Length: 216
Image (cartoon, rainbow, N blue to C red; front, side, top):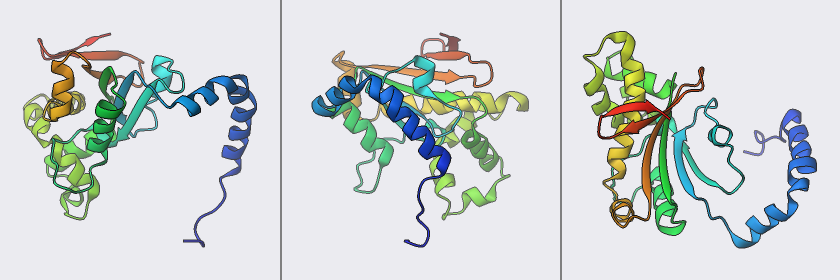
């Protein structure tokens, strides 16, 4: 390992020093308060790993305001306490039971590579993702029911519809977590589904009554 781990690239070092000298220095008391008192985020956001999705920028969030978990295609698996490694489920548990967030938000987006991969896999065009050795394919398989819901739509509409299904399926799966349902039933937390158009900047929210995504 020692032959492959290297110092940070210069441009990142320069950016760090810029942040330390400006943003951090100008808000030193706030950062020390966060360090000393711990985090109290108001919301958890489950979003995609995609570098184009910038949750804190979209909502103008301050440091300490959001507890953010990112994964491929913003997916949440069903509740499955089988003793295996479950990063997303662990993050949800920590946010709800320990941090007691008031809002749990699932946020999908346009042009999602993970969703496109799922569509290709389910259409039989990505056999490499169906290999048992593919972590990505195994992960995206939980979106397969969404593909079944959109496969009869016009082909041009399927990807966007599947991106929104990734949000809906995650919301459905969150309801299988006993502690999530308990927090919702007690009125201690609310659940939200969003979809962002990266190019246009539009933000849509899921309406469970109509089953559609409406502009925020």
